[in-house]
Amino acid sequence: QSVLTQPPSASGTPGQRVTISCSGSSSNIGSNYVYWYQQLPGTAPKLLIYRNNQRPSGVPDRFSGSKSGTSASLAISGLRSEDEADYYCAAWDDSLSGSWVFGGGTKLTVL
Amino acid sequence: QLQLQESGPGLVKPSETLSLTCTVSGGSISSSSYYWGWIRQPPGKGLEWIGSIYYSGSTYYNPSLKSRVTISVDTSKNQFSLKLSSVTAADTAVYYCARHFITMVRGVIILGNSWFDPWGQGTLVTVSS
Image 1 (tube, helix red, strand yellow):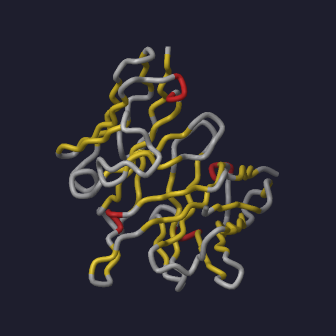
Image 2 (tube, one colour):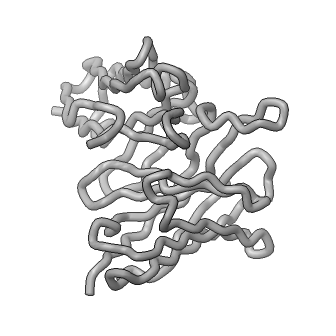
């Protein structure tokens, strides 16, 4: 059971806009930045969004992140076949001694 | 371009110690801007942070693994290493190393304002007799 909650799956057709949610608590998302990682099949995770809504160099502006309270969302517009991947949200959790926590991941299928 | 490469045995027996090394190339592990982290992913499952280390040797560990984890750094070889003791089948996973980009404010690390980028390709470690 992951500390951050994501839907296990999402889907869309090429060109569509899809969103993936990430729900947490006051000790993680509620008080810290949210990060998103993309894991293409058979590869290592790659940073997609940092500090809630910032894109690293090279990440298309089709990807955007937002945060409100103890929840966050990743939006992908103009969906493309190469976006088919697993997406993970992450945040620092201030409870106990503190730890990085991840969501369980959302598998995005491009139909 | 910074690259990270994990290395170590792919098979470890139950109750023994898992040992992995991450070699950093294309940049110095002694940079003041980064920690260096280990993250694992059991087959078909999500990600779990194990711990991170600074070039000075300062470490942060996942509390759930802290009693079994040791992360060390060798700046002369531009490497950092992971040791996980008393392993069981539950420790079977792909182990990734990653650069842990940190933010400091007046010398204090703000862990909530840090991220992992880039990652190594990962190495599968199976715990089995």
